[in-house]
Image 1 (cartoon, rainbow, N blue to C red):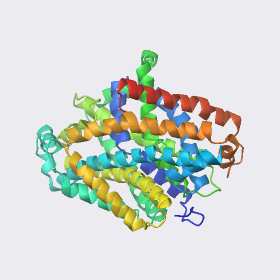
Image 2 (cartoon, one colour):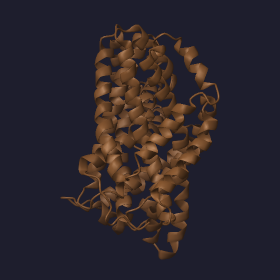
Image 3 (spheres, rainbow, N blue to C red):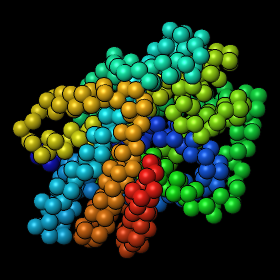
Length: 442
């Protein structure tokens, strides 16, 4: 497939909402509250905001710029980045790009399983069944049983891929609807949770800063990993959205806006889950069970709980699908670029077969967990590290700065590049080493 010289480009807000849609997902809704809960509340929030600022201004903007410069996805972008240093290195860069691209596909396979669980919860919220069950037994019933959510799994995978038929145009249209709805829904839930007896303890926990926690290295490590994963700075996914971006846009400003809305989404999710967990005396660091055991139990007890359950799981489906769009688009675009004779429809069919073929064998969450641990311990950190090194150490500084400075009123130079070359790359390499040697999943 030729470079997207005449491609349908995102509008500014369409791009922001699509990028936010990719970033907002499970990492926000249960990952962020759970890690705040396990790492000292407000102290973890301070560390998280520091890394979000660094990773968005430098890392995310670089991925947008790389995609726009190459007008293609992961494989072509790595090839061009390495070619800028030496034409002979281009082939090596193209081969290197397969690893972060594989990471996007592996995340998509596991992610689709969890969204299928969420869709099942939404369906049973609509029927009312979720309002009468023992939530622990209900979750165990399908999360430990093979092939328990096959119809929902197929709907999620096929439905998401259908939204990609028209490329950037369809991604933008769906995100312009889903993302505003997501924010409205979670604000409604946050307001309702505020009236629960005991919710005030949750707010106190979130915004009480235990400064001693900042002396603990793992507080910073967890915050760093959460920021990287939440912003989808994985050396692959956000590159493809940059390929659809107009040359007149300031990629750093767009990256900051993406991070701002992604952080708001994480905070709003935390304002739902943490106060609700305190109100019911439940563990705020419980991870996935927050969504499938804790919150349904709370919703069963409040007036209008069925309506709020429908609202909650509809928002989660939206968040999941918009993230899945990005993963599929990153892989699909790269395959089209690598094999130009492949039509987009055929590529999407191939992705559906791969995702369903592997994913159906991971439907029990105990199979999904180890798979995603492998992805988040090895593939994602290594992919992010390869991207960071490629943009800031391999690619020519002048070429990267030329792309970064398109559409800007004030040029960025050595300070921006040094922040990427030293601070950003160092952070990503630390995460990579911690993940590999301590077997910590992010």
